[in-house]
Length: 467
Image (cartoon, rainbow, N blue to C red; front, side):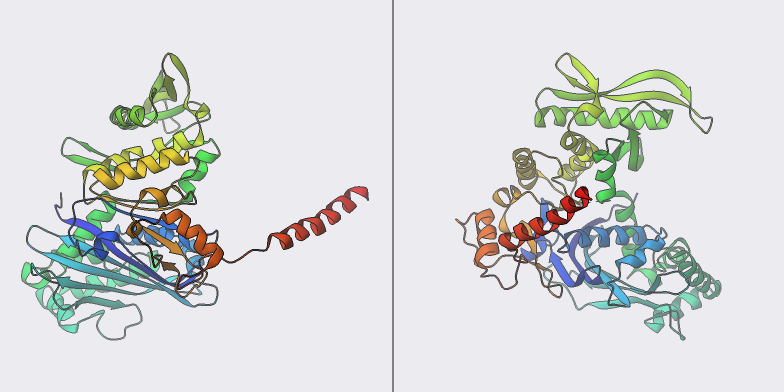
């Protein structure tokens, strides 16, 4: 298992959905605490449609690329309507046993008539840490699918790979074609990554540990949870358990969906995972919501639709002596349960990161505040979330909150003129009403005009009934 530690430092997007340009910086980066082993929490706040979710979706794309997975064709919808391309740039702090660096991965997408989307360019740069400061940034690999010369630059790196193994010329060209066909990363896709990691150390020492470390991080330590995760919970249809477990010497990570509205048939392997998740989380769950634990009602062995042996189960909620189906619990409780295993991982490991949209969905605001306070004081990993509930503004440090603006060319800011004794929630609401920030943070609405609009619309509705 790769023992390289990775943490996100910055995320920057351009031409992505309704954000022409936006950049967020993690609190540890602001504090120059580059290789922190303590909590690094960032909440993104703002009015509806102001670009909060864009950061979550951009990181979902980055995770797919770093793990060598294909992007869905729908990814083309992320390119702004008035643009032909979009760019995502992420800076990572990477610390291996031998060296530490600030790595920067950039990917550019363009519209394609054939597939709807094309990965037009990828770059990987690095600034080595010498113990006191970061050295000059170096361009490690710059790949352009439109290049008519070497497949990537700097040219000498490309030529070194070919000189080491003549078959790499063919292998890299195959990697390029498959990357274009399958919409996978040239650097991190299976074929390209295999070439980069198989080169001798004297050739690949500058970039191999970064490619391997970022790939391992995205596959094992990074969780990106979009609204699709919460949607199945809101419909009371499915509970998607996000989990990371170590079983023996093997680490298992993923999202395991279990039906809420009725019994599920799952494999014996899945049963063992769910049982382990529930056993581990019940101690924390009962501390967060006194008296509550969850369990599994096992109806016995049964074959699933593929003919594999498994168990028919239903998730249950236990409060004192009362046992009911888990589906009868509130949406907020089920939402917490679905990500609690990951939150436990973040609390205990500095290289774990959860990026989640609408963390507050259905969760009681006081509990949300307490949960964030506990994470800020004692966690070791990173948490990036969007929320509409302003309780977090009273619980987290000002560096841990950014606000989306109405300016699509400067989408994310931190409030200025925040004093140590200020209540950030009050200051935010006052800034909405009175302004005073370097960017407008709320598109002003007219309550009188809204009332008039309701009356005008109502006349049409009721006139239609009369007809």
